[in-house]
Length: 110
Length: 117
Image (cartoon, rainbow over all chains, first blue to last red; front, side, top):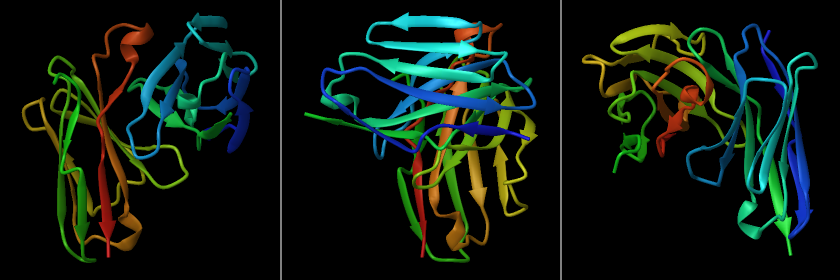
């Protein structure tokens, strides 16, 4: 079966660091995407991990462990504009269709 | 604008009516995907085109749903005899699908929000 698990909601403070975890089980796997989605808007690309390890891109970093079926997104120096839903998605199979989790709604408080 | 565009952005219809949505992908992208997203959930895959060929359809895509990409450019998604359960955001995404890596990134359009009364 196909299963992507991530927390439903998280709260963090402006300027702090937050880690959003994701576990996945899919029949096909090419890599792991993280997308950001503000309410009423389309998802926008944050990161794509194919190999194990940490990839850093400015304030955002993403980690993947293929053997554990685990990924996380790390957001540093949180800003109010980071309040959004963060979607974990497995790139599955030959067609590269995305299998999404329910999304983690992050609320950044002053 | 060189991004993915979708029309209409909003559609309100009565149960039983037919609706059609259009997606214009990024011009050089040969891969096109349709997803459906309901409130509080992540997008769910509906169907995939490579150029004009529809290569995969989800079991979510009942026989009331049909999608086309006649010339390998824009795509349409039609829902016949709409039901209230069809109310959702319908997202289109495209990618270049070149070998590996970040070329698999899917660029999403703004979506069409369907409300079935």
